[in-house]
Each structure stands twice: as C-alpha cells, then as structure tokens.
Image 1 (tube, rainbow, N blue to C red):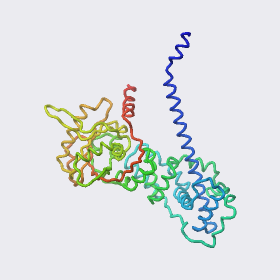
Image 2 (image 1 turned 135 degrees about the vertical axis):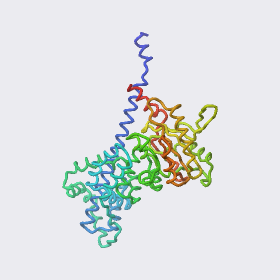
Image 3 (image 1 turned 90 degrees about the vertical axis):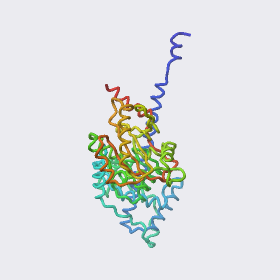
Image 4 (image 1 turned 45 degrees about the vertical axis):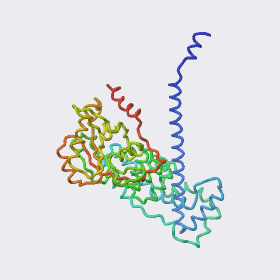
Amino acid sequence: MSNDIKNTDKQDFSPIVRAIGSDLEQTQVRVITSANADMLFHYWKVGHFILYLQKKEGWGSKVIDNLSKAIRSQYADKKGYSTRNLIYMCQFAKAYPMEVLIEMGKIEELLNSPSVDNVLQLTNELNQFTQQPVALIQNSDNQGDIITQQPVAQLREVSETLSAIYHSDISQLEEVFKQSAIVRTNWASHVILLNSKLPLGECYWYITQAVANGWSRNVLQMQIETNLFARQITARKVSNFSVRLPKPQSDLANYLMKDPYIFDMMGQTDKMAERDVERQLVSHITKYLLEMGSGFAFVAQQKHFEVGDSDFYADLILYNIQLHAYVVIELKATPFKPEYMGQLNFYINVVDDTLGGEHDNKTIGLLLCNGGDKVVAQYALSGYDQPIGVSDYQLSKAIPDNLKSALPTVEEVEEELNKFVDQE
C-alpha cells in the first residue's frame, strides 16, 4: 500500500464533519423558521379575510363555526381550523395590522442597546396603537348558512382581499410581515399572548424576550403570570449601578436586574433557611438561571476564599456574558439590614482580586433579601464604592419542569472570554 493511501486513511475528517454538521443544523433552523413564518402569514391573512367578511356580511359566532366545519370537511387532513383557532386568527390580525408591523420595524433598534428607558419608550410608542376586541361572539343566526356553500372558493380570495384592504401588492405585505418580530415565535406562544390581554408594547417585549432566551410556551406563560415585565422594567429598583459603573454597562446591569426575583422551590416554601434555599437553587440551577435572565452562567456555590488567616464562603458566584463580569450573590432569608452590605462589598473586592481577569469588567454584587425597606437600602448603598443591587426574592413552585432556555454553558463563557484574548 502506498504512502499516499496510508496518509489518506489517517486523515482527520472531524473538522470537516463538524463544519458540515453545523451548516446542516443552521439550514434546518432556517427551514423551520421559514415554515413558521409561512404559517403565521397564512393565519394572519385568513384572520383579515374573516374580519373583512364579518364587517361586510355581518357575520357572528355561528358563521365562524360553520366556516370551521366547511374547511375541515373539504380538507380533512389539515389541522388548525377549529372555531377557536379561527377566532385566534382574527385576534392575531387585529392585534398586528400592517401599520403596527411597520412601527415595530422602526423601533426595533431601541433593543440593540437594552435599557429600562429604551424599553419604556418602545412599549409606550406601541401602546399608542389602540386594540379593539374582536367582535366574533355576537349571535347572527340568520347568517348561519352564508359560508357553507362555497367556503374554499371564497378563501381563495384571501390574498386579493388583503391587497385591497392595504392598497398594496400581496408580495410587499408578505415581505413586511416576515421581516417583523412576530414571526420569530410560534403560534402556540402567540395564542398565550392573545389570551393575556396585555398591551401591545408589552406583548412585543415578551416576544423579543422569548426569542432571546429560547423560552418554550410554558416558560412564556409562567413569565407572564409572574409579571416579568413589571419586575424587570417598571419595578422601583435599588442599586448604585448608574454611579458605580460606566455606560452602557450600568444601563445593561439595571435592565437585567429584577425586583422581586421569583425562585422555584421543591417542597415547602415557607420559612426556609438560607442554606436550604441556596441548596435548592443550586440543585435546580437551570431554573435558577432562567429566572436570573439572559447570559448568566453558574460559577460556584459557597466559594471558599482564604483571606489573611480567615476562611470566607461566598453564597453564589455567576458570570454574565453580556456584562463580561462576575456577579456575586448573597442570599438572606430575612428582611434587608444595612450590615449585609458590608459582607457583600467584601466579597466583591475578593472576587475582583482573585477571579477577575484582565478582560473582565468590574464585579457586580446582588443582595437578595426576603423583604425589607427599600428607602433604608438606598441610603445604605451611598457608603459603598462597589456596584451593588438590592432586590427582594419570593419562593414559589411556578416554573414548569419541561422548560427550555438558551442558557450559556461554561464552554460558551470561555469562548466569549477567548475572543478578547484573540483580539490582542
């Protein structure tokens, strides 16, 4: 056997295989994403068509029911045309008319640099578009047979009707629709948002968060039920980030902070000791990081530090990729006390000196207490130079087991940090 053949046999194809596999995965994601966008656009068109005929013909709930039966009779293998889903399609079209989709495209750049102020501006602008409830629940029995004769023939007019409504070519409407944020999540999540009755701006924010964090529909439902928007955006947060961190890091740190945090516990949640809470948080770290937010990775629990002749143990240490900083968390099972600040400030200094690298930003401290006076906490912050935030936390059993979240792995953290080294 020649040396050339031997060398060929020993060639390492793993890099090529990885490259091909990576491209395949990206292609599959694009195919799924494209299919999702096509389906949502179809539902949006059908919703508009029904709304148009409802206004023109005076349709009521019985007509919608008959339309559902007619479509399913003609296309028995097609799913998704129940009376309930047709009503959701109408609500979907009503919630996101073309002018709203265009406005979303204009203001989306505000989220490129996320901050509380940017999100509030975004939501306020979108909330100016008034949303009227879909009038599909009125009875119109005398119109009951209007759709049963030629439903499929009438549905072929969807695109033409939509073009007439917006005085635009259907291809242009499709382009605007598929470039909007609403195609980035699935129909099941849209149904949850439609049922939530949230203002348009908040719905848009939840869509962006679901996409950024890889939330399943169950996690989205939980975040809405626990009022994440209020806890992260409109809450009165206590921190000194604006004076202890440079922009835009201070804006991002304040944006990522919540008040209160809601941690999922297994078993009893009343009067749990600090160590019990901490142990459960680490045991169910995926759920814990889900509540912490985007970009957090677990580093250590009860991290040991030897300082001088004494031993110290920090409760929890995380790393945030977006902030490029360690985050030290102290957990207290009691209401806030000013003396808690000194301990956390000490750990921030130690982490900065022992863990922080050349390319890390300033370590941030987060004090989580079970209640307390925020006015006292704000006064207590004034005496510390390190960036510290203070939040309440609550214990619940709200987070579903079958969650999916785009949490960073240790490898992703290392890869992000290596980017700085490579740039040197």
